[in-house]
Amino acid sequence: MDQVPAKLRVLLIEDQRPMAENIWEYLESCGQVMDHAADGQSGLQLALDNTYDVIVLDIGLPKLDGIEVCRRYRAQGGTAPILMLTARDRIEDKLLGFEAGADDYLTKPFELRELSARIQVLHKRQQRQSPAILRIGDLALDVAARNATRRDEPLSLSPAGYRLLEALMRNSPNVMRYGELAQALWGDTEHDPARLHTHVSLLRAAVDRAYDQPLILTVHGFGYRIVPPAAT
Image 1 (cartoon, rainbow, N blue to C red):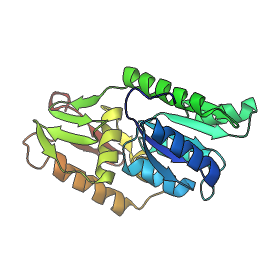
Image 2 (cartoon, rainbow, N blue to C red):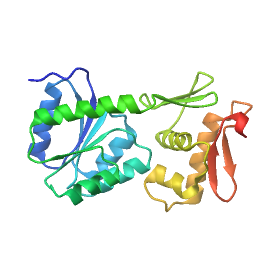
Image 3 (cartoon, rainbow, N blue to C red):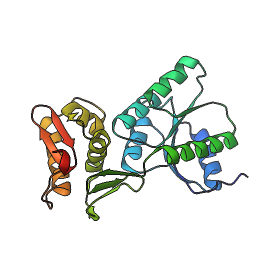
């Protein structure tokens, strides 16, 4: 059995039980920490609520297909590498997956050793490419640990607040329109304005209330942006 150099947290979204069990058992025996969802809707929720090193995502899923799971996960700020599994081998299908935000594509049937190797490659590539910490002024967000600090003091954020903050920081100093923020929160530009503003208000309370220089700014009639004090 090939041993994985480091423990990775892997989310497997696969509805075929025998396939899921085989993948789970093999990767777990290699030392990886596994979570599993049997449909796209619950898989998307797990992906958004937790931090994973790699997501293994089947395309043909109930409730929400893999392409849509991938698209919504990326739209809501998800950064984990995604390896798509599918029985479809047409180039058009692969391109559709890549356009939705997938990082790699493995056609069934496949060797479990190859799956494990590709997971490792994706993880190493992510470590090289992604900044470990986002910074705006004295505000820092640790992407891997999913926590934020300001002046080195920890901030208490809900999952929704974390998604909003990450989206704002990744887009800084640009304005994020209301629809874009709704997409980051719920995967859909259609939204209840009052509900959206409530989430932003809670985020502001966590990020700005205890400090004399606010970072989250309102752009009236458009949305919000986050900038360091010198840029305001």
